[in-house]
Length: 398
Image (cartoon, rainbow, N blue to C red; front, side, top):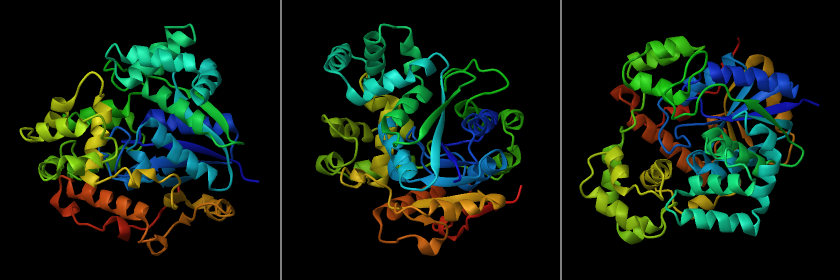
């Protein structure tokens, strides 16, 4: 039986640290194939990806992955638990997955099983600690990390628990399907928000910042497949962070409190803060700055902005299991995986446009989001809707 190691990713852009992880995932799991479940046009930070998903998928296939699936938008722009649960649902509903690999801070790896068990049970004592810490004005992630570290009797773990990798790793373990073995890989380098990173690896956030500021040498130095990204930058085939600000502000300025209250992520009167801020905000960044408080993190508000733009309602967000898994690309020698992974009675594996169920809420949301990604592209020639539907599955011969 083929052993498959899953990797949940974004690769915006695909850098040398990602390649290291893919190679280590294969080596440490002993798997026959590595399958990536990758965010498409929207990322977990609540923003549109800078680079086209096919560029990112091709980079992964040239540097250690055998097949790349697209994580549906409903999950890719969700909070950590939603992001993880969507990816784990794909693993659970396709045949062959035996392992899941993810990056994690070295200090946390020995504690992962225990912390994941605590997250699943959430003892009353931990819940009380979280509520007490929240009352001090901390955001939920910060309060949860501090309370968990104190519950474990090791306050020094708080910083590691707050890293994006650790937050996702623990949610993966919490939702991990039975029979799939975790393979944590030590993360080499600094946190996403740390600007002191040095060679050989830097974060995707640092590289995006280099691209936005015009320091393209960073892409050449740290991307194993740099040419497509450099061409995208040169041709302005990228989605800038504020690319759809006017569309977002239009949505808000034409919504009522009741309209906004129905959007996924809106609660506790947050609709009024958004509507008030939208009256004077000039772009997405200024809108978030006006709404932000100590309790609401930038990432959380960013995800809500995306939900507003997409019209992602609480009802739509209730989708528990993906309707299908779409293949973005595959290495030609690994084509056998397609038939192997279809052997289960789980979700369909889609490789062609004609197989996409046009009446599916997942399809409608994914298609609309990809169209919006194109609309926010800096090159007017890329703003045509439907390009994604006409793009065939990638086949990489390397």
